Length: 226
Ligand code: CA
Image (cartoon, rainbow, N blue to C red):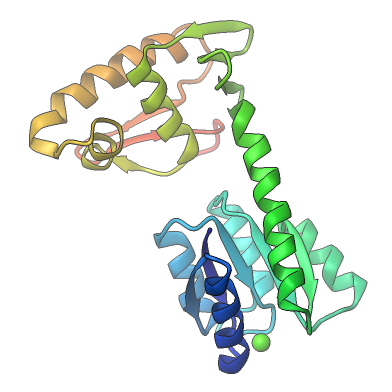
């Protein structure tokens, strides 16, 4: 897994990084809250390990920000705050798990394996954004009661939009991920496929999910909220 570790105690952070890397994970360290949040929003991680007592921005505030953004990266809290109030609060704010310090490296690794199994299970069968579902087994989509047949590239494009729901994706980014070609080659292809996809998933529904940001790219909206 690619892991973002936001922990201000250097020695502990290095110890965790070492343990994670020994188990085959990639670990990026951030040592204060504000920079950690920025990193979490700018780059893709499979999981964020988050301390609560951090300089500049608390872990609780980071959880709130991630939820509002919204970020789908699972967060595991690692904290010396062991009051059940804190645990409940962190879980309510969106943390997937809470590990009390001090903990054994083996326990952290086991929690990550459990998290990975949950992620794999969720991803294996379907992907859900708002009332739109992508079905990996039947290789189609559903919106409301409508079953939507998709070509291979339409499926890949919709999957990319759904995995990044509510984020603006540039045409360049989409072209690279779905067609593995650069922008000059593919600007029209992306537009053409978005047009096709719109007809399939938005036509006849109350609110259009695929939004065009002129001159920038596209965004799949998970709700009607602006
Ligand atoms: Ca701390």
